[in-house]
Length: 289
Image 1 (cartoon, rainbow, N blue to C red):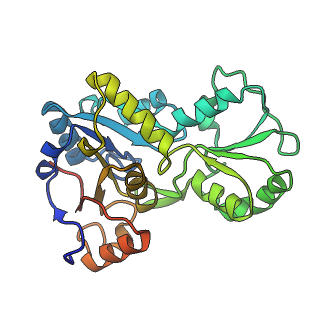
Image 2: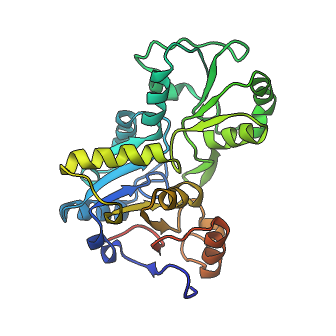
């Protein structure tokens, strides 16, 4: 890598002593939607045993208890983290504040827990007060283009869209699937107003650090907080904007652009960081101790 590029490290152990709190991305770092990554889970558990606090920070459009249930199914050990903060948590707070407004929901049935117990009234696109987008109705077969006509109708009514998952894509196994962020970005490009609940926007980081302070009994200065993630647009840009360091995982969502899952192309790394205008503290191929 060039002199201006961040170092490429093989082991998180090198960075760990410099931080008290880790805000770790989930999908692409801790698991791939089908199985947990054992070395990553071990690294986080070791960090905790050394006195660190791990908050899993995810753009999942579901509340943290639902996310924890999914992590349990994938056999992500509870010892790998202290708490989970999700974009679903942030989105739910926004929905609760607008409980008197009717909602048009774009997303699968599995995302409905974000509305549970809020007594929200739902309405069709022609009548709703605003839109909550948590994903595609069928992410296995649809793309954002399937929604262009619907989005045009929403824009005609100038409806606000709350995006409960700002991710554009994630990998389910080795298959890429579109997320709510891809629909929200299309809507925004058409002139629609979007409120993004998760990374790279501040509210989710603020909520995560409040949770970390509760767990540790005191606030943690930004220089002692490290974000870990695999997405330039959300994890790296979000950490930079919030003023905290980031460890970038190269074998995640950008693997095909960065040399594949078994190697890292240093020139491609330099190019992707230059395009984004931000640099991580360091780069690792996969998270391991």
